[in-house]
Image 1 (cartoon, protein in one colour):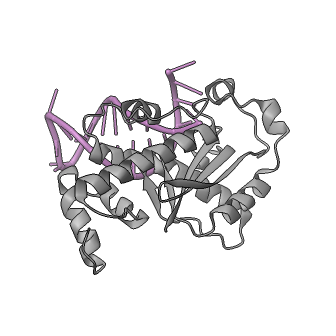
Image 2 (cartoon, chains in turn orange, brown):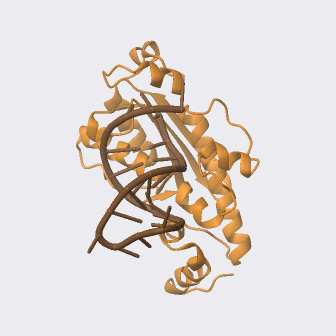
Amino acid sequence: MHRIAVIDFETTGLSPAMGDRATEIAIVLVEGTQVVGRFQSLMNAGVRLSPFIEDYTGISNEMIRAAPPADEVMAEAARFVRDVPLVAHNAAFDRRFWAAELERLGGGVPLNPPFACTMLLSRRLYPQAGSYRLGALAAFHALPSAGRAHRAMADAEVAAALLGRIRDDIRRDHGVDEVPHGLLVRLQRCQRQAVPKAVREYFGDRGHAAA
DNA sequence: TGCCAGGCCCTCTTTAGGGCCTT
């Protein structure tokens, strides 16, 4: 059974290119419909959080001061993930911080692994959703609450539940047994109307028919 | 709930602009 790692960062801002740093990471490891592992840690990158970020995330400067160094946390996170493919909500954001924080470590950790994005997939699959914020999609699907929004583990848990819903819906609507990460990546890039054809082509390309 | 960025997506588009989404 293929594993997928659902990841969420809390950060000091929106752009590592502008000097922003990660403050917290959470990873939920899923296998099929089961959560098989969790990793979560605050991290101290030696930066100060703005009052806005303290309020937005609930993470304080005092909490960051007491947290382990960012390089230690990221090294541990990379060991936890290994080569498992990644998923995030608005993955372009988390991908940038994943790459930027790991690049600081050096040591040959892959900086740009494939990411699937629950936001892009939701835009394809749920045109009636209205909003594609994580919280709005959780409400749309009546997913269970996982704690305080905008903390890494709570958001990673919700994103993992959303991913489970997405995979269930693809299985049901397209008659397939499995929804591998590669199929998610393919679907998030195709036009909404092209999803059925993309599912057929994905399994056809791999030499076995969809169930 | 703001500013910074970047990618996606829609439309009053494509020789562009603006909203959404992430912190």
